[in-house]
Image 1 (tube, each protein chain N blue to C red):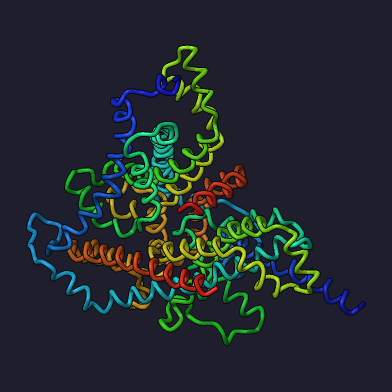
Image 2: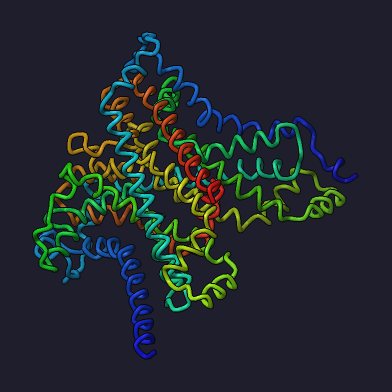
Length: 279
Length: 296
């Protein structure tokens, strides 16, 4: 009996250790990048694992000075923020009509949008490139907004539509009796009530578009319009053996995402998995 | 009564639904038709387009690199289904157990890689695999296992495994959260009865948990397959398909043909190939998994 108790205790400790090791493996690489980027190149090559003896920001200053990192981050921010606003606005309006009214083609439109979660985006890169070229939409400041908004809509509509379904209809009826128009009711009463789901959609869309790579790669050519993932690949090619510089650039590119994650991780985990199970 | 009064005019439906529908169609639906249309041409992007019928598809059918890319996609997908869902299953069954500490911390931390840009994950792992400055070789040296050191991203023999590790690593947390919520929806009484009957640990997981979360497992496998048929960013950041063609995947091959060799007609044919093969793989898996359910 005692042996059994000891064994089961050992098993519990072992389980805790295994999970802890895995957890550490998930964040250690990024922590390693962060503190190594504060070392000099020589210090890093002497010992890759030690903490910086004299932390300094030269790698960051260099990364910002020698490349257009800040410009790329600005471009990413611009694309991500504008597409978030449009995804929410367009998604909310469509979700509202799909949720509140029965009309001909309602189910068809809903299915049509949900289909977008299944389409392998990468199979569409080449034809989208051709379309953009033909219509002169290629390599413009607004180019990336098209795919970012369009591919953000399915999840946005799915999440907002099901959320509006939980809001009682009496809300609109009361507003109507008080003389509020539909548009006014929609934007001043229902939209604010959707705040929780909208914040989820906003965070997910922001992440997705800040991180987006293939569209930015094929639809943008102009250096001044590059987004951060593209800037990072050029930087990485250029500084292929300057590891600490590369790490500084990676940390710079990831910092906003880490910040948002720390602030909203609960919402993020819930939102990302909710959208996935449907898709 | 009020519902009818509340109903907006038809023009309003059109005004509110149409902009979104048009934009969405332009990016998602129209390209599918255009891909089919362009795939019948020989075209390098200039004004001259030559109609060549099915020739691109005949070439595609005989194109060894394309089938190598497809094979690589399938191997990577298989490794990821086993790795991501397998590890996620073990971790989440540990995480829902009573004796595990710091659950909230583990959940938050294992989900962290999911939010990183695939390109960033690619670069981070390029550094981990780096010969001189990498964490992996450092760890091997620290454990006196120098013999295992390899050119991780330059050895065609192991490249598919080494590029799958970052993919698996990044998304375990994602599948873990999905599986955990499935675990927690199983009524506790079932486990209690099983424990009385003497089922413990692994037996409990295999004979009770596994059958009960089948539907969720099915969803995660589908997500995993469709996610891995389109991998591109990681590969672009780590190897660009090399060394040689050893780590090429379908999306990478379409990219190379269209944007490095300017064979746009052929690139569109490859796109159709990706669409058809991904869909076929998903249908076959669905059939296979559905077939099993008839047996039980």
